[in-house]
Length: 603
Image (cartoon, rainbow, N blue to C red; front, side):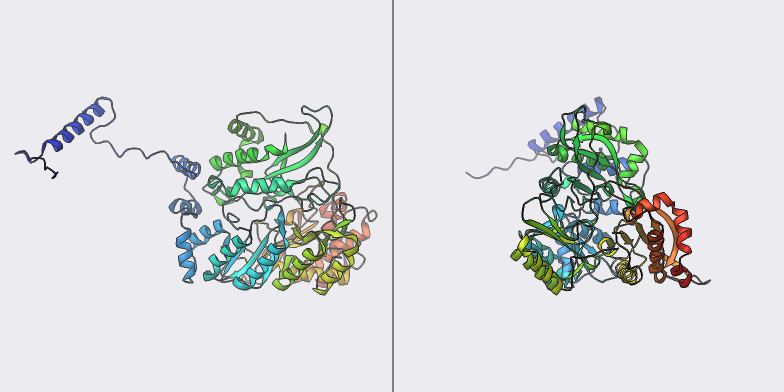
């Protein structure tokens, strides 16, 4: 049947159009009567944000409504979510285009950092929960470093891997290659939850109270599958410590979960619980503090999620220097913050008085280096010393073969910028040590080299004031030549800037990069401010500054003088450098060190 066309009336409207206009006019009249519409009224209020980004959009809107001005990074996130912009980023990178600052920020959501001008290329940071990967994944990263990067790999202070010198056109192929070997870099940079750390000896340590591997993996999966947990006011760190012999440094994290033994007489049943500590950010001179809250291990994810959502809603989105969770805790106090967390959870959390918690079992500063018996009879873990975390891709592949041939096939990265083999039978220990030596590496280290930690430094980071990795090796060489009697581990940490990626404040001796003025015209050279007396695990402490603006060329002599003072005045080898510093006092230590021949000669 043919369609019929409505007839048009003399006034120019057909009957159907008239009915529509009459209905519209009636609706307007009704709205005016109820106050829903008025002559001269402005545009309707924007719709309530929905979807996974809603929690962040609402927080931004509240900031502006309260009179704040969003920082540039918040504007970039609002203009184009880094995940939504991925295909555009791929196309521009494939054409060899260098990213603008806002796109450099967005790429970090995918694990890539444009590090120009220090290196005109990307650095890729991976996501490896608990720092444990299979030998074939380890070798696969080396292959990707050869195909798309500079042919070397770094171990980071979050028990993670980084690959550098990735040109723009190799950015997405590198990320695709990670997927092929079962790894990802998603969310490992920018305003997101960073790599999840756990005990490096989880499951093989006879001292541990709890195996952190399932917890770290579960939390990692929780993060990567919930987009609402991306785009925080600033980066966020979470760590799980199982109470074993090798510390995880959870006290330097925003959230730390510590396995503890609750004793009889507490408000909860005795046994192994997870203690919640909050607010660690060592670069801002703060370690995580005990909240008194204890959790069953299976509750960690839900509690961490609630803590982070309170931070998302209330963190500072105007000032990047004050945008970490620590500053919300400082402003609110712990009680108010935890009340908000409990409100989100819809329940009260259990609390235990510290008097009903067994002391943490002692850690071993050499546990990440050398041969150590596992709790499995006849098996060992072996820690390999890496020069400030760096390996060539050929070394990585050869090390992966050792793990496959002689151990359980796993590589366990540590927060000390090295790694350990696990599952090595007694009969194959000598073979492993020999093969490691053939690669130019060692499992034996004393003095400072076993505890030497350095961030990327000025060679590859635009924020760093000094070449931390290069200077760390110079300091180690100098000390090994001049302080041959050093018979105990001493941790020396070098970080290039206030971000404190090498956590200089918790080292026995910490150095933070600084530009040192050397002329009246304002010329500068690389140098460091130096702190002493930091600690971690059973002795957590922020170090105290004793020298400012020390030229990098003089830093080895300062470290030598401190160590010589310690050896001359300690109360036996059982007194650690940290204990000696606390007993002596930082000013007295500085004055005594300045009397050492090493410093007088350097002056």
